Length: 372
Image (cartoon, rainbow, N blue to C red; front, side, top):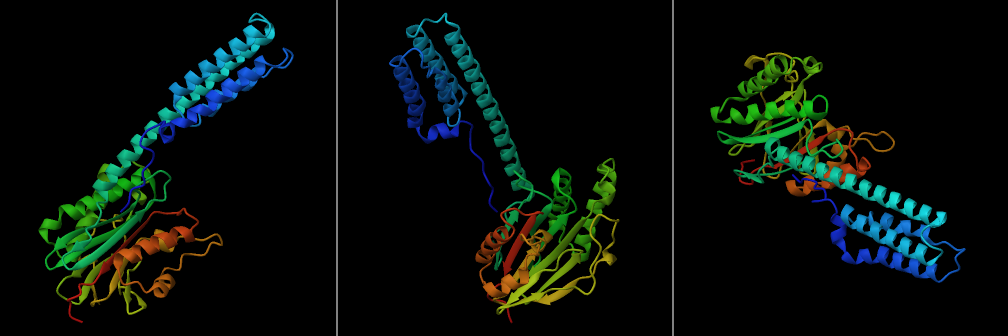
């Protein structure tokens, strides 16, 4: 799972090439020399304002201010040689250059401060992502796993989608889910569910019990901790909990209102629809009996694809939904990493580079030694 990183520190472009500072310096020197050697009726001094303005585009406030001082000094020299500093024209030019240089320097300072703040926010978001959505292991027993996460919020690293994996007896247990809504409230709900999922792994609960535990955790959090929030009563999480068995040609799962996974086998795509879909988590305090386990075949060469609705609800410019099944059939990928990478690039290209909702994708390759 990649993390988009911003610039490491403000003023970074200045480090791209110290030679850029020659441009405003040459500009100041050229304007000064030309102005001095032209008749007094021609005034080129006002063009000196371009020097600090250009400097602010690639250097920090210190360098910008220094160039502004040089520009003002050049204007003083021009004024002294062309009629004296006490003439109203030269006094007005010097005053204007001082004011503009100060403003440009202040704006550059404010911009750098904002970039430092954004850098800190990105760093915190990246750290939160590592805690909430730890990258899934590339291997879990004999399984090969690949995953990716695309947040819809600008400048965000995480959102309301979630996934996690823990060991289970003879299997790898995974959860993928989607919290209703966006922003920090959705992130908080996702953190509750992921924390409950990981925290109960040592108990080796059967699927109905673990799903009931997750549902009660989300419901209790919404009613007792977030009860004061106006959207708490409407919060819920669609989720899919799957046990991928290592030593048998099958998977078991419980679906709580989540988009069904897809099974890629020999160039075909099978939708793993369950006979009875449970309610999304968080709407009530569930019991084990509320959930039914479904079993599906899973053989060597198969790829299991788990995803959130941000994938299938992505639209192109005409408003057409992303044709996930058609894409998978035409690609006929057999490697989980290649499939996830191709799907991510194709999805972003289809949606014009920006998704309307968070999207998470997990691809799992069946163990090669599993019986058919």
